[in-house]
Length: 115
Image: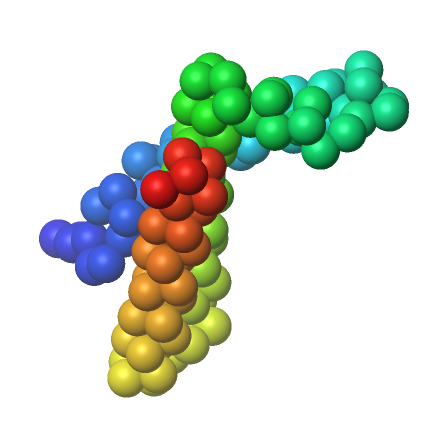
């Protein structure tokens, strides 16, 4: 019997699907931001601030931020389980990565929503 260890989704299929979904979200967000920048070549800070003051932009940015967290956690977990064979070192690596991702997500929420 095969058991899941510390995988994000507890199954390889779920992790694979999450990687694809989060990659799609990040790709769409990138196109959204690049498209806005291309349509506004003389962008001022006030226009940029007004753009990010819109609720749908903040929600999409939050979704992209959460997608970055999930995507990076799954990727780093897979890399660490493949290449860091020593259990203690892998645990420390995963703990540091998880802590940093949590801090970045909380910080990103503060930046996006101005908390």
